[in-house]
Image 1 (tube, rainbow, N blue to C red):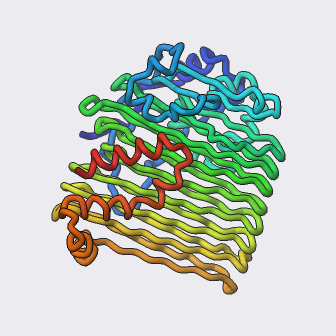
Image 2: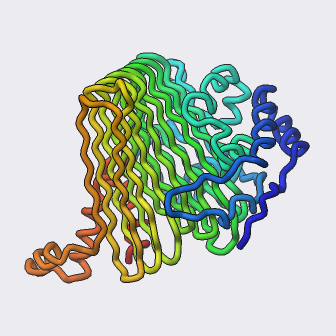
Image 3: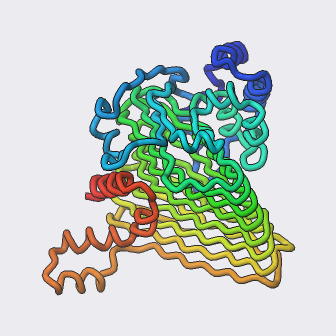
Length: 435
């Protein structure tokens, strides 16, 4: 299918949409500027993946969802994301483009923590959002998809943690694309002030196997001096949704950003996970697992760029491909001049379960400083016959032995997710996609 370049939403529509959301003037102006630039900016060019004919413009932009009075009224597949043994105190559920449920612990509110949908944040915390929104991490004019995102953003989360506040329990958001044509153009903005800490986990789910739409998701994580942000996500869009995700972090002095991403989409996907280690002794650990099946095409890029001295970056990407699916895994460790004593490590491995499946692991080190350490590992292949033989020699069937090997292969990310229900849900998705 050839995608039309002309967007079905014009200046008048964007203006009315922004005003209808009661957004501040700066946001309306940003949208209009982005819309204008989107007409001339090119699409991104992910390595070895041609996305020129992918669907990024065929979708419904405004679809309301009903509010829910009780979590018990949610469908089972949504309830599976929740730890039912615990009281859900810090949770937002976005249903299509409407906040269906939202709650935050009063103790956190008293400490100045803000956890709300992005629309409410724009109305009630405009100056704070403006300070960080598409400034430090992602810029509106990088390419056509970032511009379209800025022009048409229709959902997302704002999470702000004040200085010295340590949040022990995970903060959770669930994004439910209930309508098969709704496009989730979500913006997730997480700001952790000095010496604060927070764990945030999000889930995406849809059911549109046939109906065509797209998702354009941008995340910005800002970790100030001494802050720690642990970010977990499970993306599970159905085959009808073409997905672009751009999750980006900026870590200042002694800050830590950890990523644990489960990429379980059924449709074509481009995913970028980029962290800039700006401050001295900053750290990032970026882990991604992905499964591809059918004829889907996916491109994953993890990039940690070192600017601060003594910064430490580790990238791990594990993918499983079956049927005729294909995926590119790019791991990029870049050490800029002046970032002495830094360390860049990466590991990209792809396991292929079918003869027609394709995987490509590309480790890339770009070093512009002498006094550093760096390393990489990459492999593409099938299930290790020695491992299989060893397990089968212990009386385990071939099916179960292969299953154990695959779960062990994907375990580094599954184990890191902070919400037990999300771990279980990701395990269930892995079982469903692989077998």
